[in-house]
Length: 318
View (cartoon, rainbow, N blue to C red):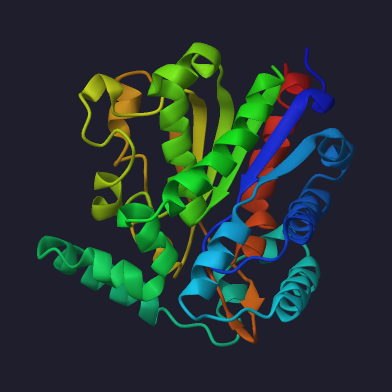
């Protein structure tokens, strides 16, 4: 039986400017630990013994966005993230992560979610989805269809970290957020089908993949995933056992919030054991307004805490 010291949790962050790696890992881990401590205090020692690492590419994104003329105040960003975490930590017990509490969050608006739901299918039908993505996230558009080496550079970062975890022969939980879900999917596909990588990693599995605010349900984005144009036998990753997809109400990034239907063929081909969708309310407040896509709000949420707890204690339950 493995111990939690054999467990690796690899976190892949999302889009936009990001703090330095150590700061972002500390904030992310603290939010995850706070959720576990709130709901499963006996599991905290197991989480603390696990190896929690960040598939970090924030510096690459920061440089790309700064090259477009955008500016970033890292100290303010770190401070606001810590304030968001402190506020979320005060919400006790877990049953308060409900629609009633969500309706009280300041600045809450479903307008962007409505626009994504209504516009994405229409614009996709006439070939304008990429301009819509570019309006929201220049780096996401660059990753999907850019002419620079941005996509390969960020994949290399995530691939290196995931391969290190898989190479230790322990248990691995992969947790990705937003754009990081697309990158993680592509890396998982590469480890499943790239000849140079399959020889070493083809037989290794990610026990649980947790996607948070994932845009993978979008038809346009799925057409740009690694393997999308391949024969069905080589179209999907083959190295995930359980896939848990968590989508927050009003999170426009995952406007198509269910993935079990979109990736049903993975189940049909017995490439994955389960793909489970969960709908939550993300109570994070960033810069004074509701931010249902906030990674901190996802990491600390009771649903994510339960997934992490169940994975950490799986051996103890048998």
